[in-house]
Structures are given as structure tokens and as C-alpha cells.
Length: 548
Image (cartoon, rainbow, N blue to C red; front, top):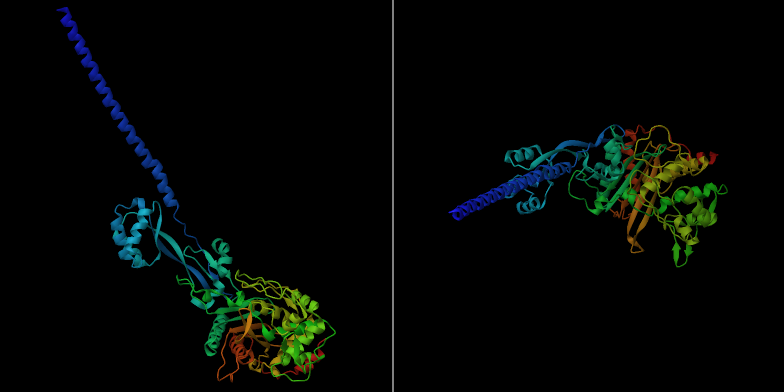
């Protein structure tokens, strides 16, 4: 009996222990599941929450970019408020629905491509920049979770192409990528005041119009033109054609983007005779009336220097410039000497880069070995090349009492004191000689009655694979008005203009560039407050002799 009773108690004890074990196992299982749930909640609410915050933090902030205005306060670049659409893919409930609806709103978004993008992206994805109000409303009507709007700004250029090579433009994020927008990117984003340019949009329009007409009339590939205030170096107009519209999202071609006014290296042709003449006069032993024998061509190795419609006689320095004698210019260079010629070109700034508020500038090109042969051809503008901006800067300095200013696209406040490059006497002589070149010389087509225009044209054959082409050239003209104390300088150049019936078969600068410059001066003179004078023409030869 006792044995049997003891076994019963022993069985009950074992059953109780098994039950307790099972209860403990269940409790442990519940605790484990609870811990898993807690860990998952921590991951979702804390870790993923931080990632979500980072996703929102990765959304670019809209920057405020101040206006750019011309010298008269006319807005040439401004920012308009707009909205852009972005997606947070982790918030999207149905990727297929999102792809369907977004592609239905934006015809330029491919449904399948967009589906792949949102599936592959984890935190942030731009969907569409700078939405129109109607597009914004259409997206709102879709009621899609995971899609958000960001207030942004869009850069707008009211005058489209007119100032493209000066302004440059911005990218989709409103960051400057070229021109003034690039150089002054930080200033435009941090300043509270508009950036004021030296450009006058009225002058810019007139120059653009006349240059475009000339390119069309003479079937040229392109052209460039600059108008500069001589006393300050301020650029009132800077034009390069072809150009582009910075408002458009499509990238311009390299030909349209290229700024011929600042980035090209062009041989000046006979325009360089201004520099050669100034060099001679600076020696103080050569005067405007010193004579050189220009009767016979000059031999340089296997090449011969000729005059175009030469006079076949002795010519004074004044006549060498007036009749654009290559032979006379080369003989002046030989008289002065190649070393002194190089030193003079260095002094006036033709062998160094010209500084400007544009990064798209060109370093001058000149021979490393400045030989006698180089010296002779450089005297009449071959074998050396620089940009139109470079050329007009030096000419303006010569006419500014011999003081050269750095060119600027920003309106200067106060007077500018330039660097002396030639004496005041030589400056006065050059001004009168440039006027005589128009009244008596080869550039009579640059004349504008009452404006006393002075100037010099230049035709240069283009280099093609290291050789000069007889069928392609640059035609340029640099001028200033009103002489003998000019206030404004003008330079223009056309790329491969063609002869017409009007030019009697000639495609030289005197027939093409000079009259184009006259058209520009005729239009911009009144805008600049320079009215045609009714005074009789001075005796320029007499004035030249009296300069001391």
C-alpha cells in the first residue's frame, strides 16, 4: 500500500514539473517575441526615422540669386519663384501607380524608365524641375503619397540672346556656369544689391543689330564687336555672333557658345600699323614726317612684302599709315630694331593676357623667336594674334592720353587712373593720324558726318592647318570718336565675309568692316550724348604739325 502511494505522489510531482517547464517556455517565447517587436519598433522609429530625416535633409535648399542690371538699372537677369517636384521612394505605396500617374502628367517622362528610377532610389529623387502652375495642380490632383514640392527659383533673361556671351548662364540648380553668372556666382548668391554691369542695353541692341545685318549682307560665318568708354575702360557693348538663348534648357553648340570677342586669337592685319606707328613716334627721333623708301617690294627669304595698290615712292610715317603701306611699316620696324619692337609691344600690353571679368579670355599668340623676319611681318599685323577685347583695350589706352585701363564689364565708381603706355604727345599724334586715315586715306567709308571718326581697318588671311588661306580672311576695323579727343572706341571683326556687288568684288576691311563701323557709330552716337557737330572740318595736317 505504502509503495503504491509513494509512486502516486512521485507521478504527480513529475507532472507538475512538466507543466511548470511548459509555462516557463511559453513565457520565454512571449518575452522573445516581445523583444523582437521592441527591436523592430526601435529600428523603424529611431534608425529608419533618422534615415527619413536625412532624406528630407538631402533635398537641396532654394538659393536666392540677386538681379543683374545694366548701367542704367535695366534688369538683364532675374530669378522668378517656381516649384520643383521630388519623390521620397520609401513613402510610395504603389510604384506602378506612381509611374503611371506621373508619366501621364509629364509627357517627357517615360513610364518604364521612371518606374526603374523610383524602385532603385531609396531616399530622394528629382522628378521635375521648375513646374508650371498647371503642372503643379495636376500632380496635386493625383493624390500620390511620397511626392513633394520644393519652392525654388528659375533664372530668367528677359533679353534672351542679346547679352548671352556676357551673362553666360546658370545650370538647373541656379549655379553659374559661364560668363558673369559664373565669375560672380558667390557674390550673386550672398549680396542683397543687384550686380550693375557697365553694359548699356540700348548700345548693345544697336551693335547687335548692325553686326547681324553685316553678317547677313556679306555672308560671314560670324563676327564680334565691342564699344568701350575710353576714359574708364568700361565696356558699353560686347557682342559675339552667333549667340544663344540662355533661357533654353538645350545646350548651345560649341560655335554658338564660343565668345569671339574675348576667346579668339585673330591676326589684326593692318590695324597693327597703329602700334607700329606709335612705336616709331616713341623713339623721339622718328616724326610723322620722317620718310621711308616704299618704291620696291621687300624680300624675306622666299617671301616678298608687297603693298596693295602701292604708291611706288618715298612715304612719310603719316602716309605709311594713311595709305596702309606694308613696305613702309616693315622698314619702320627694321629701323627701330626687333628687340625694341618686342619691348614696345610688351610695354603696351600686347604680349600679356588682358584681365576682364570673364573667364573665357585668350592669351596672345606671338613668335618665340622674334627675328627680323617676324618683326617685319608683325609691323603690318601678321605673325601675332590677340582677341578683339585685347586690341581695343590697347588702342583705347593709346587714345586716353597714353593711359591704359583694364577693360571692365562692371560699372566703375569714381575715376580710373590707367597705366602709362605711351607719352601724351604720341597719344595726340595717333589720334590725329587716325582721323587723317579716314579723311584722306584708305578708310573713307568709316566716315560719319559731324562725328570726326578716326580709325584703321585690317584684313588678315586665316590660318588653315598652319598655312594662310587666300580664300578666307578676317576683316576688322578699330575706330574712335569724336577726334581729336575721343570719348568712345569701337572695334568689330567679321569672320570670312564674302565680296558682293556693292563691294565691287573686294572682301577687304575697307569695303566691309569700315562701313559697318560707320553704321554703328551713326546709331550709338546720339544715345551716348555725342551729337553730330556742325563745325567745319579742322586742318588735321596743320594740327599734326603743331603737336608738341
